[in-house]
Length: 155
Image 1 (tube, one colour):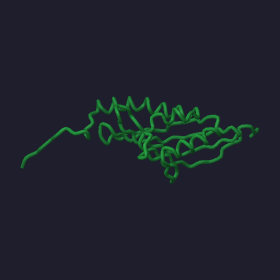
Image 2 (cartoon, helix red, strand yellow; image 1 turned 90 degrees about the vertical axis):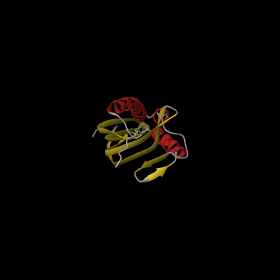
Image 3 (cartoon, helix red, strand yellow; image 1 turned 135 degrees about the vertical axis):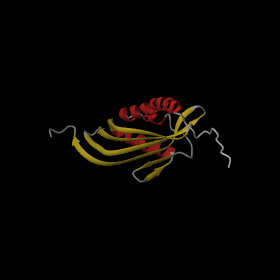
């Protein structure tokens, strides 16, 4: 019986994982800063503008164009969002495909003085290295949302 071993794109060393995580942390931090500042350009600059892109929000799927339209309208209604990361995980499918998952909380502060808390919340991004750049090819958000306060009230 012969044993064969070959190096493939699926084998990711610890050193490679560390380097990839460092690269992806910059991308994820930009996405999250965009969410916090209600800046759609920052959020989507790393998203793959393709018919293959899929965004899932609480059981609904959207295309890249649908997300831009929906998120743009939503961002126009908020002052900002406050993100609290509970934990993060990177799953390496291969050297060019990584799934990032975070358990987090989001507080959305609206221009009409209302606020909504998403807690618990899970966000997941599937990253693929395309033309030497990390792109989100699939994104998922799911949360339990509740109105928490009217910012302008004395409560």
